[in-house]
Length: 546
Image (cartoon, rainbow, N blue to C red):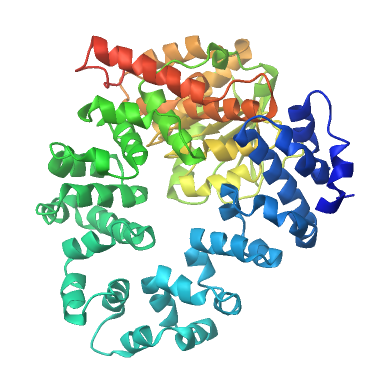
């Protein structure tokens, strides 16, 4: 039974005298009232916050009404911004709803009537006027209702027949300027981006469209058009559009426009994102060492922690030796490989089939997939586009295919999985999702590009090694580095004993649940000292990938 705040004294009487942190972590979901009553006794804000979050969400999942008495205790917590909009509406708290709406305006604007009833629609339209105008231009009932509720100035702008919709949306973002001045700015990419560069709801889609067009048309001409842009705006364009930037495009953009023009970096936002991308795309050594050291400062957010971890991994900064523990042999004996029904998935499956046609591997064909065996090791793999049922619980999960298919693979990831292999491009971005589902799994991922020219020979080598005994990662990986020295894509693969992101996630969880566990800030202090010493000894080479 969940106790409201007026029963807090009774709940406080249940606070464990010893082992308080471990007890509250264990009870947060099953006995939230005790968690709320006792959390204040825990040392460390991050630990207290983790307990409150789990307890509040446990109540909210049961019923938003059960969580309502505790709204005052959590309304200002940073994780409130990650609540779903339906839950924020159900909690009926203006503070919580405002926080969620400001964090997710593109979702909130589509709930026009709910935002209108809550009195938040005017501020929401002011926050994303261009997007609101685009939705209001549609033909749905929702669009018609939003048109009715737009401010008069946006209604008049939308009604103009002499302007196309993209230009109208730009003018909406420039609504505070005189019309002729705004029109001149809106028609010039450089001047327009200078005005909206710091407004992420508009700068990010603008930049992503820019880089998508650069990839489609060829980057040379597009990049040449940026020669007269200010360095800060070039930097912000690159950071805002990073989801559409690949290695070749980053290097071309950086080398042509930014390499010699980053003197003002101390005043630029999102530096960790930029340093991470420079590291992944091979330009870390071109940055000032001070900029990289700053990226390794103790982070204030989960995102910053993972970005810094990638930089540390590329610099080969020291991790806890316990990461190199051998992977148990038994975990490898049952595997599930996932393939998807597109050109990449079919090519990957054909490569998989070729890889295991020799060396004593036995194949059994099924209507929906294949079984591949050697000794006690068994692989179950679906045919691309087919659902291949499996009753047993695999110890190894292998994802083969584009990164946008990864959520489908993770939907089948059992909590007991011991090893997860993400062979898609940018697998590093899914490490946190993997460990949320399988907390103790070892994870092998790519930083950037994944390829079947690495995936199949590497996976087969792993399986052959597993048949001989536990996989000792350091010695196994050293052998593979020699084997793949002619394949530059192998350098994009990160094994479990070098996966700094997984290391930090697990260390952070230990800190949140074990009183004796050190704070993860200690890891960043150690990394900064290690890199500073390296740079002091060899300033010109300290940022080169080892």
